[in-house]
Amino acid sequence: MTDETISLPAVEEFTNPGQPVEAVQDIMEVFLDTASVERVYGEPIQQGDTLIIPAAEVLTGLGFGLGGGIGIDDQGNTNSGGGGGGGGGGRSFARPVAAIIASPNGVRIEPVVDVTKIALAMFTAAGFMAGMCLRMMSRRRTMKLDECAE
Amino acid sequence: MFVQVKTKAGAPVRAGEISITPVARILCLQLPGSVGGLIWNHPTAVVLRTKDGEEKVLPIRDITRQAQLAFLGVTAGLLVVAWLMHRKNKTTPKKEITR
Image (cartoon, rainbow over all chains, first blue to last red; front, top):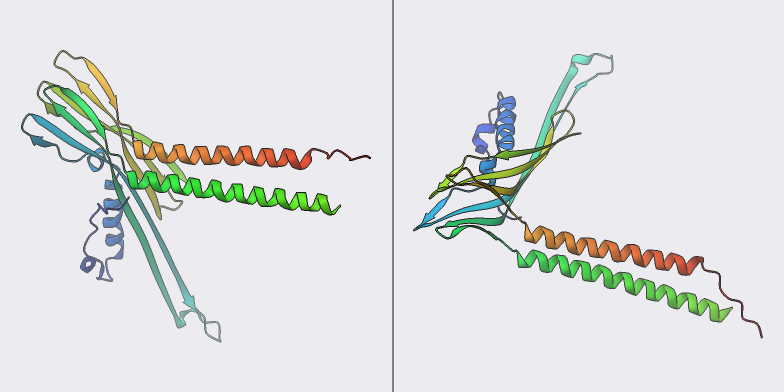
């Protein structure tokens, strides 16, 4: 999951302080647009008699937060000042999954195998298991030493 | 928290005499108060339709994800087995050595 696929509106569009709601709406529209089939399947590519449709997995996350407050002076007046603010963030990931190949011989699906990701998962699992074995062996040794001491 | 799973079919694509309809599964996770969320969109299958009206579904397998899950499953399984064995050794009473 490396490539960002969603193009958010330009920063200049968000600099107008009078339109924060519109900016949020724009972002939400872009975010909800991720939930369509067109985001997963790419444009078909025609190569001679063969038609290729790329397929990818898309994951998008988004979050907002808003806050505000009013200042109270020594006399208890609430109109002495106030402020507010908000923020948000999001990220989008896409990963190729397969390619659908339609040729005169028929239609087939070629999976995209990410060897790096699989190797990383394998090494993480192996490291975890090795750590677990070492921990168990050291504990067993401690128990044996305790038995000998008794 | 609001969770929604939808299966959507896209516009069919013509490849010779076959019509290919892509299908995707979408998981929408909305945070309370509409302050954000998460959308996971992934391809699941393609539906092939011939001129005769014959339909065939070709599932799309995510080999990378399956391999990752397999490693995770094996590790979790071994962890549980090791924990059970360790627990058994701990609870089994030791035989007293008599001379």
